[in-house]
Image 1 (cartoon, rainbow, N blue to C red):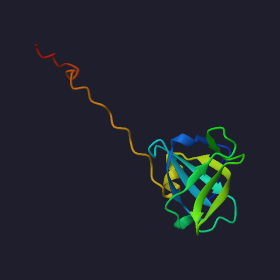
Image 2 (image 1 turned 30 degrees about the vertical axis):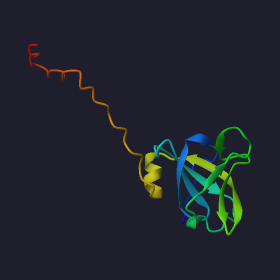
Image 3 (image 1 turned 60 degrees about the vertical axis):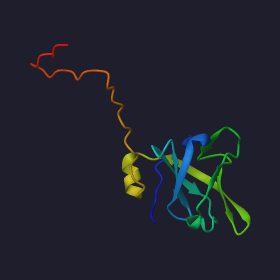
Image 4 (image 1 turned 90 degrees about the vertical axis):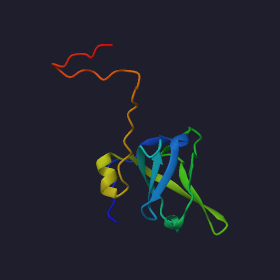
Amino acid sequence: QGIKMSRTSDCVFQSTIDGFEVLDNRYVVLFASGRRKAYLADLSNGCMDVRSQSALAAVDGDGNGQICGFGRDSIAYRRMSMVEDCRILGLEQLSDERRMELGVGVPPKPQKKQDDKKDPKPEDGEKTPPR
């Protein structure tokens, strides 16, 4: 898979990460804020069987509350009763276009709240109905 990262030093708050999708044993997409934001993580070599994992943890290695494409942050998972810890070498926040390119879909559109208490505004040339 010919994945190229456009930048590698983005960050995401660890507490907002709520999902992931493994692209291969080197690249993982982290989702944040209800899948509205997506980040491509480039993992260090030697991460075995990442694709077959049903649970991953984003580890804040430097204790700053963020997962970044630099520093000591990593992705960890349990493999054969051992914990594998794969350092994150780069992190790129993905645009909608980039998400489509990688096949991870665009974020769900926020639903507009409707205020039932207000009357609909009259169109141009239309009279306001009497009350």
